[in-house]
Length: 237
Ligand code: ADP
Ligand code: UDP
Image (cartoon, rainbow, N blue to C red; front, side, top):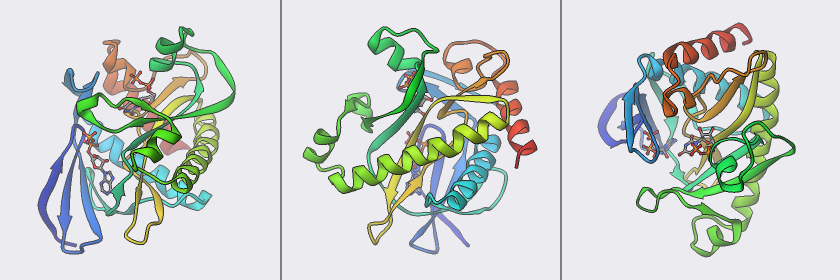
């Protein structure tokens, strides 16, 4: 596997071409951003943790019946993934109210939902990733109704798996964001990452936040929280 030119540098990862046109290499950085890039910082060692964690969870999800982009971990920060055309939707699943949900509906953080919710944001930095519903996503042709159904079903399946997995680690899965993509034959697979950058994770005993909210809200102990989550994950693999 030969690493070729850099195709893209995002806020948290770099993406490289390879000598195989259907494969990419992603490289995880320690850079952290919040509030649409307005807040910038570094979480030392984050890239190493997010790379490993994402890969471990995606391999588990494959076994659970969710196809993913994961191919092979190359090094601490680098992974080979299947190249997909990203469906430009942030797929957000929630088990407990927090963040933008709490703000939008005036519900305090911590309300446990009877059933998980699924919502979409249209991935578009210029527009600030606005909330979008199924009909609108079909209307602007970012996905077909069938693709949206598939994505929702996979997202809920990921939630079933992750909720149980994190519970065994003494962690409550509050909410998370997923991205899906299409392979050249149109197959939908889970892409991007699953990490404390993209999930809200609370300690089951103390309720302590063990995720990127420590960075967003200047709570301190960001690196320790990421390391704690990684430690518990490794103990339960
Ligand atoms: P952002 O673009 O939001 O700053 P990142 O820094 O995480 O995010 O950059 C990674 C980029 O790679 C994202 O735009 C993501 O949608 C995209 N991506 C993730 N997995 C794949 C994949 N398998 N194939 C193609 N693009 C991918
Ligand atoms: N999230 C993410 N990337 C985004 C927006 C949200 O990974 O661009 C994750 C976030 O970490 C949380 C979940 O999606 O786990 C729900 O986030 P929310 O809509 O509450 O937004 P926020 O509070 O981050 O504004």
